[in-house]
Image 1 (spheres, rainbow, N blue to C red):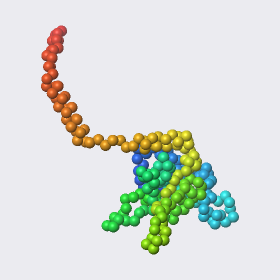
Image 2 (cartoon, helix red, strand yellow; image 1 turned 180 degrees about the vertical axis):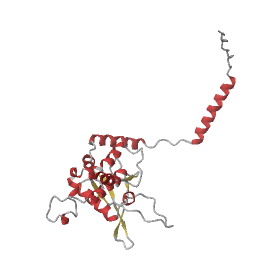
Image 3 (spheres, helix red, strand yellow; image 1 turned 45 degrees about the vertical axis):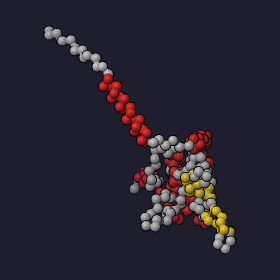
Image 4 (cartoon, rainbow, N blue to C red; image 1 turned 90 degrees about the vertical axis):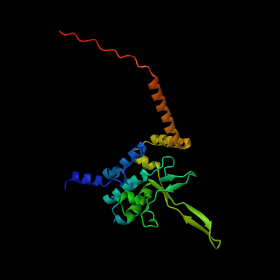
Length: 245
C-alpha cells in the first residue's frame, strides 16, 4: 500500500464515535481538529514522547519516539476531552449550580438494573480504545502538562464513628498550555471564556407558555380575516383593447 493511502487510513482512525454538533464553540472545534497534528506533525510535540513509562523502553537511546498507535490514542483521548470541555472552568464535564463538576467519565458507567447499558458518555466509549490505552494516554497528557486530574472526595462518619470518605469520578481539566501548543490564541480563549461566563450570569431564556403563543397567533389571524372582510375592494379596471393592424 502506498504511503498516501496509509496516511489517509491513519487519519481516518482519528475520529470520535460521536458527531460534533454545529453549535459547539468554534474555538473547541478548531482545537479538536488541531489534535490531528499530534500524529501528522509529531516532531512538534516532543513533550508527548517522554512520558511516564517510557524510560524503561528506551534501552539507552534518549531520542526514541512514541509508537504511532500510542500517539493516536493520545490524540483521540484529547479530542474527547476537548469535546466535553467547559470554557468557563476548562473542566471536562457538566458544571452544576454549586460550581461543582459532573465529571466526564473515563470508563463506561455500570449498567442499569434491567441490564441496559448506561447512557452516560465516557472516553472509552467515544474513542473505542481499551482501558489500558486510555489510561496510558491520560498519563502522557498529564506528564506533558496538557491535562490535570483531580478526584473529589467527601468525608463522612461511619457506623462506628470513624472518619471515612467517599470518592467520586475523577475530574479532568484541559490547561491553557494545551490550547497554546495546539495553535490556539490565548487571547481568543480568554474572550470566549468571558462570553461563556456572561451567558451563564444572564441565565437561561425565560420559558414561554406555548398556549399563550397559540392564542396570540389565533387572535392575529382573526383580526386579519376581519380586516379582509370589511375592506372595500376597488373595481377592477380592464385593460384597453388591442388595436388590430
